[in-house]
Length: 494
Image (cartoon, rainbow, N blue to C red; front, side):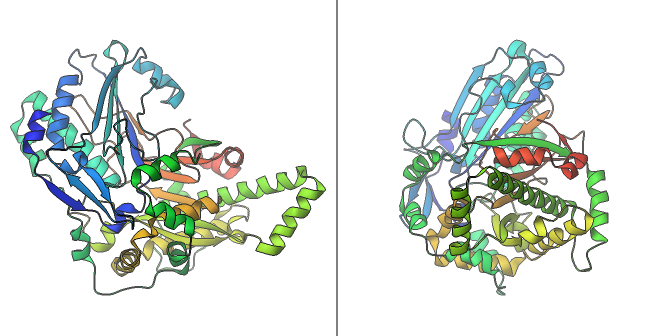
């Protein structure tokens, strides 16, 4: 650690409004490494620790602290005399790696205290928000190691997160085998933390944002304004008590690429818009949206059947006054790096932009077959296909004009419990970090993230399946598990 401190240069990194879009959330992942060869020198703690601080030299932002104005503007301050060092913990477990394998890595089998952060970004024991938390857990009889890493969305998205973990692995392997060529390759990796890269990359042309996105970000919300005015530590403390994960359950599924591609072809046969580029993940996002809408419909039907006369009358009166909901809010996260043409430039800041649209329940609630799925898929595909440079530029303009608007989507989602957030992480480097003893056997996030969050993840290298993590309120999830179309397509992992 001393060597890292000696290399630190004082700097201030003003964050971009894009960085604040999911700033109240962490990016937390667990990496499960088996000691396949039963080696006594398997992923030694001292080398893991030393290589961690060597990798941190390339990511000094993770040792900074947040300085905020009450308007949503935030700066990371890296001060050599006042470093906010990552929390780095090590422990041992009496659990064998084989026990984790037998449980298919279900969180009930994990070592106690493995995850040292939750989904919400809060201050650590010293009163500061740590910009990285690490926990190394060595399993019984040295049968494996589990690495937990968490970083807040203030400083990275998935691209930045997995870039650091991969770099850490490269440096560790190079140290262990004394490979100067591999160390040089790690040194040549490009990491850009300058948020001005976004401004320099914006095109001159602009494209109108859809009305739903504008409404979410510009609608009047005293609660959102108040949350934006708070300090990150106070806001995190309040949100951590908001029980986003109460009565929430998560399940993980696997869907084969072959099954998805077959479904995509059947769906495309019912889409008469040849200009649309339909990806399998578009079909998957549409299918999940339909499943959730249908599950909510069944929940309402069951609630009506079990409700008394007074409750039914109150529900009808509320619908008459405020109007019955006729659509489901769908928030698709797209990486702006591709739209701006900077995907290969090593930008480490948050590049995810949420695209909000309202999908008619009349479309989503229809029984699922290729034809009804085609209508929902077309909506999803148009959103992704529209996420080009001019649209990104318009989105950035909107944020720059309203730096405090970053809390509005959170409040909107809380007020619309049927809203979905879908993120496609299949292109992230989940299985690229090799510390010298092979790749992880399984990588996953924390058990219950936040309600209505859907993540598409890659499978381990031995498979091309898509891993689908679904987090919903428990009554809604029960209907997902009984959805016949989904059960024919997907296999539950846990």
